Image (cartoon, rainbow, N blue to C red):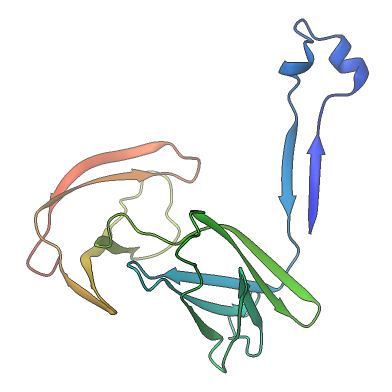
Length: 189
């Protein structure tokens, strides 16, 4: 874990036109060096349950016996790299954001801003793909995909075919907008 602060040198700061100390730009970056990848799902509702999936960052192999902790609760991952922590928030806790720590041997990964509530549990999820990953300039690109409405009812997540018209935007690798339009979904989303 490393926190880096970047600020102008004294000489550069004195040469600035507006060198009021309140305007001094300081950039801070938090760096982590870890071999752990952490995926989280926090359930909505009153029984706040957090499911963590821990894998090796390089290979994607599940990590078992990793210690996952949030607040005063700790659990150990199973052979699939999964663990669930139930009711980790107390009723009198009004903090919206939490910090999650995952530890395996000498490796440590920290996730901040874990939210334990969901304002709208139903969500649209999608998967978009193309026929190949690299195209020549001016070559036609063929993109396909599907959209599902993921309805959360209690512990169940029920995907249904999304219907209607959706807006889409295609960007190039530099973030330039290539195309923006609408498309009507078929019966299968």
